[in-house]
Every structure is written in structure tokens, then in C-alpha cells.
Amino acid sequence: MRTVKSAFKFKGGVHPDYNKELARAKPIEKLPCPAELVVSMSQHLGAPAKCIVKPGDYVERGQLIGEKNGFISVCVRAPAAGLVKSVEARSGAAGGVAPAVILDTTAEKPSDLQPSTFNLQPLDWRTASREDLLKRIEEAGICGMGGAGFPTSVKLNPPPGKRCEYLILNGAECEPYLCADHHLMVERADRIRIGVEIMRKILGDCAVRIAIEANKPDAIAAMEKAFADISGNVEIVVLPVLYPQGSEKHQIYATVGRIVPEPPALPIDVGCVVENVGTVAAIADAVEKGEPLLERVTTVSGDAVQEPKNILAPCGTKYSDLVAFCGGEKGVPAKVISGGTMMGFAVPNLEIATTKTTSGLLLLSKNRIFQYSSQACINCGRCVRACPMNLNAAEIAKAVEADDIKAAEDLHVMTCIECGACSFSCPAYRPITQFCRRAKNSIRARIAAEKAKAAAAAAERERK
Image 1 (tube, rainbow, N blue to C red):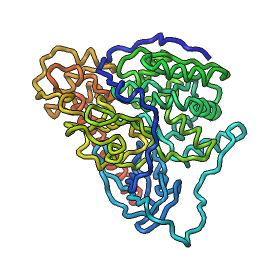
Image 2: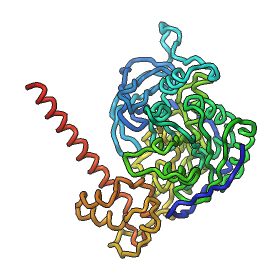
Image 3: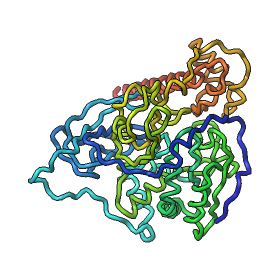
Image 4: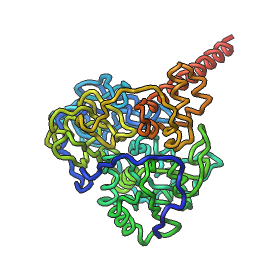
């Protein structure tokens, strides 16, 4: 194993104020289980899980409460024992609504309940088959924990004709304020090492690249120690501090110099699989300990919270419980953001709950919020220079403003990764990223409608 500096630098990118010092020195603290958990059936990319419990049921920790509901879907297990108070639609951080199990964790276990049989049995990854390891990852409910939430068992099982040549561990964590992955690498590097061994057994003989930004020297040192004696082609790649260094496509280029083509191309099309370090640690726990993905580390930070922390909390913890664990609010927050300041979502209240992909919660005062109104584009080109995907963001935004979604599509808006670099660099404070999201949602809706129409027509022809 060796440590090298990245030999490749992508075009564009920005340097926001990172503000990581607020939580960087705070070790991970475990949150006592809250009295109530709100466990969403949509904690991942793809179809929400199918809820299989009902009000009045008592569930054990680790019990399956949501079944996988399609190829791109992930099962959901109870993060704590408790009584199902209700199953109702709840809003998520990104604004969508999905069924959620409201769990009362203070309820006493019924005396006539049979002994728990919901725990997964530990596996010896050295002797377990590839199929058994993939099955364990699936039944543990593991998805990508870096943001998108793609089902991990699907990502680690490339289609026929595709082979993983490089397994890339994403430890960049380039979003401002967030330190969850940083502390995982410092405090749980040994678990990440085991997760890598397991994934290499699943993927076959592949090289490993561990990508970490240069502003995390203690994480680099911890990973060097944990991987010192690992066999095979393994390197820690120290990346320049540049946002969005944690983007999957840009990390592939920064570490191995390969370029992922436009959608629908995927990283596996260039021989790469990228996994967040939190996901890797979760794989180790699921296999070696039989522990499903029931909790995760979330950074709670910002200048409007009393004590920023990195908190290990059950999935389904309400934001209000995280904030209370940090000593409460400091003044009145002007904005609350789920995630980081670049790609996160502003949320209306603290009743929204964490999921498997909740990396951060930021409470910001009015001093940290732009107080300017959006203006007309001044054609300065800063958004074009900042875009890491080489898009003409200014023209896309103008097209969307004119409701010309076709023009935005022709300008390759579907390639946009919604990193926010364009909006960050715009002196006119234009919400360019939001324009791109609007266009992408419209295009996806149109494609879905066309597919549904084609399916209905095919069914009608079959009926006749």
C-alpha cells in the first residue's frame, strides 16, 4: 500500500468557505435512543420499500418492517424495538412524501411475544461465497450513504460483460461543515479495511483507490495505518481541496484518470465502482457482526446551534432530537439545511427525520445567509467556468426561465450533477442549480409518461 497525490485535476470547481472547524475536533457521540422514531420507507434511490407492519404491532430492533420493492430498492429494518403507533405519509428532507412507520420506543414489550429471531447471523467473509455476501448486504438494507442512496447489492453486482477494475473509496467529504466521513476514517479505519476485503471478494481481483482530500491529514494517517499490510494494488490518493471533489464522476477522473460518458453510462462502464467510506464500514458490520444498517453518523453544525457534534443516531431520529442533543439552538436559525450548504436541501422544520443518507444538519444564522434577490444574467461566464461538467449553465437557466425544456435538454442538462458550483459563483445570485433541477424533473416526468403510454399501448395490442 502506498500514498500518492492525485495526478489528474478536473476542469471547473469552486472553493467555498468550508467551516469544518466547528465539528472537526468533535469525536463521534452516540445519541440515546429517542422516545419516537419516524422511519421512512424511502431512505434510498428507487422505489420505496413496501411497509409490512401495521399500527399496534410491536417490533424488535432489526426486524424487517419494509420489504424491498423492486430491483432498485432497499429493505428497511426497525432501528429500535418499540410499538408501531401509526403508518402515515411523512415529508422527507428533499420535499418528497413517503410512508413512514412512527415507532414508540418507550413501549414495553408484550409478555406473550416470542423470543426475537430477527438478528442476522455473523458470516465469515473469508469462507462465505460471493452470493452469500451479496445476499447479506441486501438483507441488511445497505445503500450508498454518501447522498444518492443507490442500493449497494446492485452496485456490487455488475451486469454480464462488465468488470470492476478499480474499487474507489470516497472519503473526500468536500461539502462545507460536514465531518461525519472524516471521523469515520479516523475512528473506524479498521472496519473500513474489513469492508474493503469483503468487497474485493465480491468484485474479484480489483485495484483499490482510497480518495481523501488533503485537508484531512489525520484521516489519511489513520487509513495508512489500517491498510499498511493489505495485499494487492492499493493506494491512498490525496486529492486537492476543491469542490466537488466528492462527486463520483470527478473522483474517478481524479484517482484513475478515466472519464464516465454522459448518461445513461455508469462508472462500471469504465471499470469502476465507487463507494462511500460509511457504506464500506456498514458492509463490514453487516457481514462480520450481523448488524443491519440501522444507524449512521450525522454532523450537526452551523453558527445557530449551541454545540456542533458528530452524532451516531438511529435512522428515523427527528432533527429536533439531534439539535437537543447539541444543547439546542443558538438564537433563531435563519435557515435549516439537511446535508451540506452546496447540495443540501432547506427544510421547513425540525420534525423531519434522518435516513440512511443524512450526512448533515446545519442551522445557520442570518449572518451566514445571502440576503440578495436574484437578478438577470449579466453574461459574465463565471458559472460556465465553475461547472465541472463543462455545461453552459447560463444558457440552460435562460431556457428553463422561458419554459423551453427542450432547449435545456439539448444543452445536456441531464448531465448536470446539481453540485451548486454555478449558483455559488453567480454574482447575480441566480438560482441556476434549481433551474437545472426543474428541467431534469420535467424531462424525467415526460420520459415516464411516454413509457407508461407505450406500455399501455402494448397491453392493448396484446388484449386484442
